[in-house]
Length: 376
Image 1 (cartoon, rainbow, N blue to C red):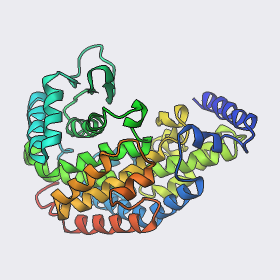
Image 2 (image 1 turned 180 degrees about the horizontal axis):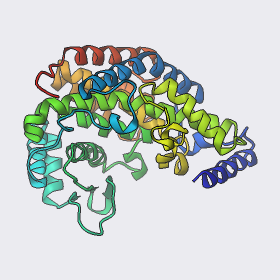
Image 3 (image 1 turned 120 degrees about the vertical axis):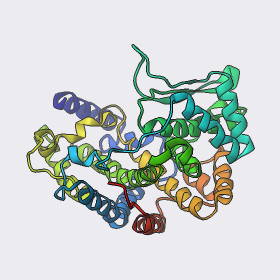
Image 4 (image 1 turned 45 degrees about the vertical axis):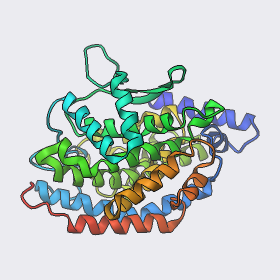
């Protein structure tokens, strides 16, 4: 894996220099379609994550260590278990989840209710895990028929519910804009697309009990905590890639050292003491295929997750108002840049430091006041 990545880095560095750039970074930004923000804007975003969000994420893992009876910081294995009684699981069968999804969308708004019924009636969801089926989950479209298609693999975890909401967010965005010409303008840029999906997950909160039953409180906590702790990891991935392409001649061991050092900045809750050598030696980055296959892609998820947390905060105050902002954002399709889409919908840009400061504060207050009594 080290050898493959080393070859990729040097190949991409050569590509960038042949195009007249300093290396691969500028070319990588162009290839990702960055059209309204720069490397410097991303640097400011990462700095705000460290300043405002890392302390909140760190407090989540400190509380988790207490619940599990573990010493902080915990190992990667221990961090994967949020509750001693188990992570939240949906109730019922796959059919039950889809039925609750129909109820959720019908009651959320007429337009998305009609969309989801079209998807169900057209058998445009392939969500059951079957022998020989490819893994993963995604949304695509069938333009000739004017419909989206959702592919997934239910496995009995909260991810089953999240995929119905996440991928349906993508599908609804395309369905809403399916008649745009040219067709390429149905979708916005990558980070803007992820706002549709990540935010839709939070819109399902008022209907969560129908999905999770007695695990509903676990789900609320787990879902929000997961969003908050993901962003530091995602920005770590981004910072790592910038260093790698700024210094393409680093040898593999030096790259591992960079990752390990950055872990202390972005993920101080992870114990790197040699218990699991793959992690303690700084090779954890190899688990993220985006680093190999799609350089500089991963920050898109972090930017979108930040906007989704804006929607989460709105939903806590006024669900109909939050939905109006969501529709104002979604109806624009790909007719504007990411930052313009946000501005037109009355949303703050994640590049504005105030955005992360406010969502971090709102999340900290919610976590501090959330009742976990009886949940271990």
